[in-house]
Image (tube, rainbow, N blue to C red):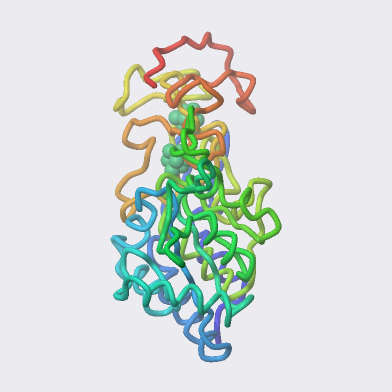
Length: 337
Ligand code: SF4
Ligand code: SF4
């Protein structure tokens, strides 16, 4: 029998439930890894037998393809297998065999014949200036088809739209000041569609495959006010951080790469950023942003990368930090961006 929703959530979030919050250092339990892959894959296979494959179409706007690379070039080959073999990934510009009109026919076929029966994944922001000409894919009657048009056409008939990576979710780097192409997030292009934001620069492979699996098995997951699945983005980095004890004691790192000390004065955005990377970690749990002495840059937040004009490594105003327990004077560090 396939997984229940409760079992699925426990499996995907394992390691995130045992975390204490304030006042203790290194409270995170780093379990998990790829143990979710086999049972989720089995459930998806059973569901596909019962319901027929629900195709997934992955298109790209203004993207560096980093979210595709992060998802497919994973250290767990099984995750890529889930995407390419278990889930019916019918269209992906970087990995599909077909090209040209043959490839585009997959999209037009879905648009016409599979209304409400496919999942659309969008990677990259959508340029809107000059009628969207800064990102196009294919032609029709001698005219470029823009990413904006594809998102509007395919998004209108999708069961769900997944905006993968911060560019698609919130505009990300292409929308940074001065935003010369008028880059916009997907949900603003198709405001009536059911859009799920999976931000991150890049996004974590577990977030992408886990969300697609949830949509296919149980429907749209519970989202926060930024349309992010709470399962992965429900907690602040700051509340799960292994250096939180230093913050509470007011012990600050002096420089990037320091093994000890809180990185707040070096511009850490952990107090305003939501993701489970402190527990889930990157690259087969080898390391994560703060563990290697780099401040969190808030890559999963709508304010990334400008952070309200203050820059990537600006020090957060104390007013933005909840539950502050020390009154040390925060020094102003040089803004590196
Ligand atoms: S400010 Fe950053 S480094 Fe310091 S405890 Fe919070 S998340 Fe960790
Ligand atoms: S910890 Fe910060 S920089 Fe690292 S993935 Fe999460 S939001 Fe991005």
